[in-house]
Image (cartoon, rainbow, N blue to C red):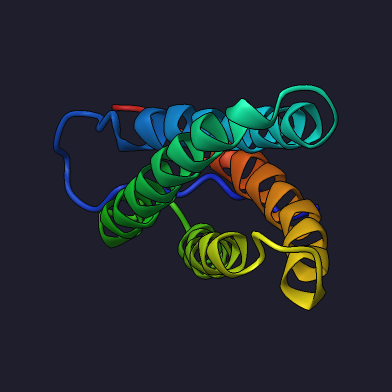
Length: 142
């Protein structure tokens, strides 16, 4: 397995960007899991939870966007790899598509079916992003 630790350029103080990226990645993955729970509850128990499902979707959009920004900043300072940025960008695209499918799939049909499948994919990519972010380490100051 390849060592993903990267060294920062220059002798500046350690950055908190990798820690922030890991925290935001964890929040995103946790929120996606909450979304699945909310979907099941509003489909089978309480239809009023659909509004909360929509709100959480918009929060996930913001956390996914923050992941892209943090991954870019960390990569530009050599505190993360290109893989962190690529996975964060893929997650952002999938989340955007998921929100679009959610709005267009309010009635049962093709969009609703794709919404479920894409939700599983979003969760998988969110976990990959989290695991990648955890492999990034703040370089040692010598």
